[in-house]
Length: 119
Image 1 (tube, rainbow, N blue to C red):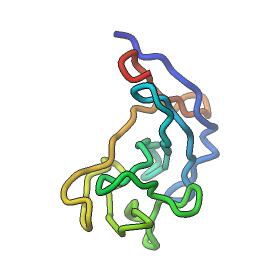
Image 2: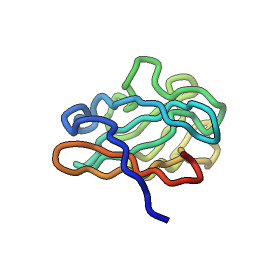
Image 3: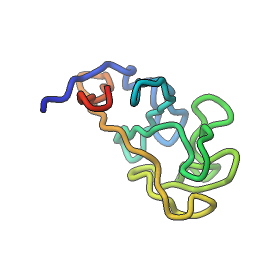
């Protein structure tokens, strides 16, 4: 199975441990919110949904990092996630991590790698 690349944003739209970029994807025949952040120079993408309850992580669009800029935080529950893996680090996520999406950065742009089963 070959993944299709979908342009999401310019590399400059996602700053190191700063504001993320929100976008929508179709997942199992419905539109869902997703986001891209940059951490240690690499882009990472996840569904924009806390693993505790289906609520968006950012209460202000694109604000996914906590004050320390080391963790992603759910603005409603305070659950903390590792930016590079989406793994739950504490709070009400109870060991469940974020759902990761595969992205690729090329030529100053960030692409989502899509496959047929989720498209």
